[in-house]
Length: 64
Image (cartoon, rainbow, N blue to C red; front, side):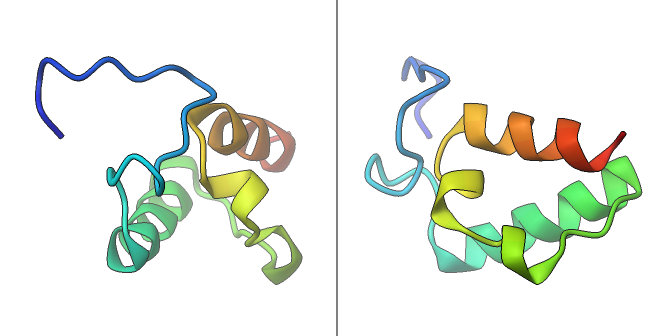
């Protein structure tokens, strides 16, 4: 991602070319390690990983 790119919380990470399938797997690994949480299979949805807001909401639900 270009350092001059401005990303809103609701911008699609996949449609904007910021993350691809390999990047998604790396992101999932990072989140599980960083927050010491397991992400259930049913939460591995585009709604939870395509935007910064979706990722944040999912982490908040699982970290409780």
